[in-house]
Length: 415
Image (cartoon, rainbow, N blue to C red):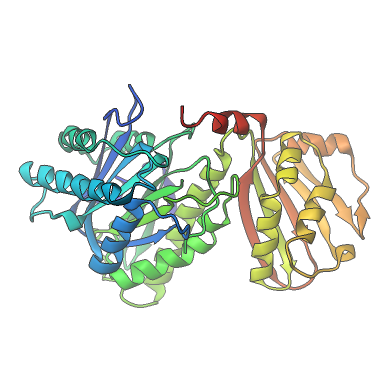
């Protein structure tokens, strides 16, 4: 398995483009498009928030009822959430504009319909999207569709809101004697606490795989990747992960859980793990990626609950920002997670590129240097490890520190 810098255009047959449509932002890219030369099997996972944005409902129909797609169009700035029937009409008109433009440009070997177009939006909740600007943005992007790395990078930029950096990854793996590629881009910085099954992730692959196996693979890897990320504990109305597979790698179609399926799942997990970490490290106002690994728990479910409890603790996140080895906050977060354990058996470590230090054991503080701990916590990536000494359950969660800047960003987000 090899990692590449290229994003969604790494797999064969995929193109991307971006445009300045002026939907909410001015003089910046705010629309992206991903297009496949061949029809794609499609899988998706979506927010469990009861307030689902119109694009989520539109995409659920395509994924669950149709199972195939040709393109994704996404805008940033306005989320098209809590927008009623007008929001659903916007999705339909956006898809119609994309289908008509693709057909007029003869981009598709076969006619493209509205049910071939997935849509996504991110930004302010409650505002209506100017559909005329979406249509104009589509018209701008069609001639710019390209398989280049630069086009993938521009598309990743266009879906950013409060993100500070574009997030994209590409991976190649051998499956059935063929080189299969998986590319991905995502956005997410605030309102991040996915419970899928305002982060968006778009994945492309040239693997030949049935829709059933594609959905099974995506649903499986989301559990230990995006669902283990938390920036601020708020589950977005727009959380969406879409995976398109066009089969152009030429491998024998994966239709069952065999060795080819396992190889595909491993590569899919790795690309989503990397994207999940990128979201966590770019949390609004963040200065550090905060990783929490719980091992030795009674079982996997307990480890997941404990890790999430620590990574979402506001007090712990604030301590990470202050480079303060306040193990009491970590123990407190473990203690209110609702999992039974013996505090006297727990061991805590802090680790980063600057070293590793044990900070808690035998029910009280370990013998460690505060100066050394502060140095370890001053790195841009910090990990807390908790060994519960109960069993073999293990899980890792990702978050970030909590800073003054987080409040500043969200205090005037709509203006």
